[in-house]
Length: 334
Image (tube, rainbow, N blue to C red; front, top):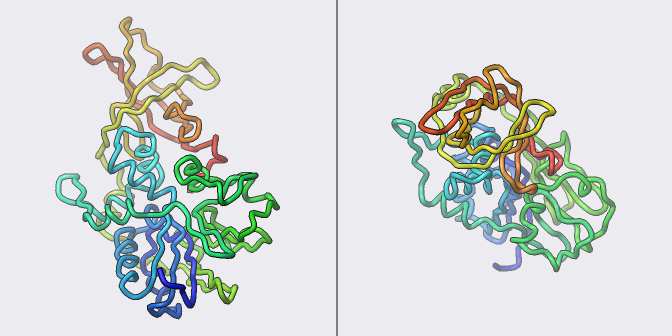
């Protein structure tokens, strides 16, 4: 990569393709410009597919570095490891909006290989002489030169908490997104470029050389694309297969171990290997639990039992989800 004459860093896009196109048009771009995307191109917004297409097209005009966000990591988990907690988290955190962009007949999804290759090519972080670019943030009390894209991956993609309040100096200015705000956040040790476009805010680029910001306000939504209308305003029946470990119990009571048979954005179908067929839950029970058995990636939830049956040696429970969070990571569900 040649030395760029100008560097821009663009915050979380989340399917806001019209705003991204307008923002790119407002930047001074030539073949010596470097545009760094800070991750979260997909989910929540209406046009995730077009956002990726715009980034791929921009590569023909200038230098582009695209970083991975937690939503791209979840998307890859869904595509490559449907049994993983990340796959479930993808669906539970706006992934249905993304899949609607790739919808085919009969509940299938046609994702171009160029888009899969794009997701697999994303970098975890990027740095220049004076700036360090990352999606969410960096670990405390650790030198940037010691960061490992594998070992520190969860922190780099998901962190909030202490990172957002520390005054620690890493020797370079950390430029990140992930945590939406009304305006760019400028501190002595970090700059947050996520201005919450998908939530009605704006899409922002940080002009590194000029130390300035360019923002495009969220465009009014005139109409919903048909696939989104079907998936978001009606409770679609599509369920995704995945064997994720789950511990669950009635509120404040001892938990039992289950496994998911399938899931969607509204609920889980749990199976319990229970030879006695003694019911753990009854219809209408309010339950709480955790999806996954790794504290770094587990998902906390609350819900209600809406189905209970015995089937071929298994006891099955349908859980309608009311609340989903990742408390172990300061609830970073964005």
